[in-house]
Length: 335
Ligand code: DOR
Ligand code: ZN
Image 1: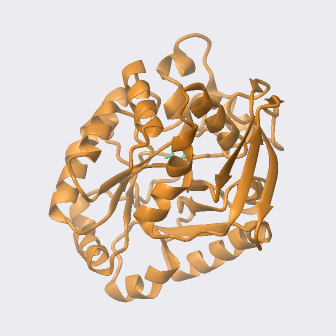
Image 2: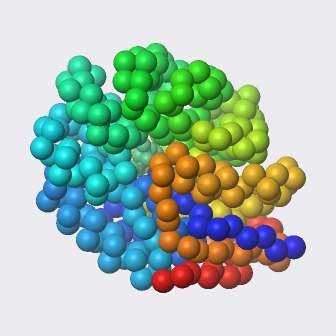
């Protein structure tokens, strides 16, 4: 059976820089027509010079393939001049609490430090993207952050706030309580629980932040995606790390899913008789929420069976070496 998606979007991904970017960005650009590119580099993308240089690298690696990179800035206190200059070049500003994940040391220590910036973003209609975790017990970090989302959503009621990579039933419930809250969810959080990472033999390639939670959380997220929930968007959080940084003591957080995410999503949605919902989840919701109009790309899938590659260069993808039922059989791009 064949199935098509129009202009799929990945609303949260990590491309890195240099050789890693050259390896992974074309893999996303092959099957997606756009994506929200995260700014957690060293140093972070937090001024016009960094943005210029990074956007140039990203476009060089992706635009021949008909891919629109939606660039982001790393949250710090910005002046109104800076935001006015940059607003048309970014899709949003990404807020990382300081030290919460990979390359977030320069993140926000105290929300009051960015209150003026948030007010200006609200006025200039620049969305806020948030990594919503506290430094608490690992399974409670997202739920502990929900009160911060509530404060942000009510204090800045015109600000569009995207709860990135949600992992809990409680976060889903919050989504329905505030008009200005939206969310992304990853592939892995629709499929796995903490047991898949650490319940048997440790699987570092499934370790990411926020960590996958309980079966009831995973099931609720999956039901919402399959519905499809109109405020939920696909964002892979595909986060490549070289193999030696994953298969070691002190394993880096991040699951690399970009090149296989769509095929696996098609299989997952087909299994639940919900293929009709996949266009909204992987593209239409994001277009409506962000008001973007990505390049036209038609991606065709067939259930002819496939095997997930063992590696891409030095990076190990999710479910490496496992069989999948759907493969991408054609990509038509209008350049
Ligand atoms: O697991 C993660 N990896 N979570 C993040 O928030 C960042 C990402 C990365 O950049 O590696
Ligand atoms: Zn991320």
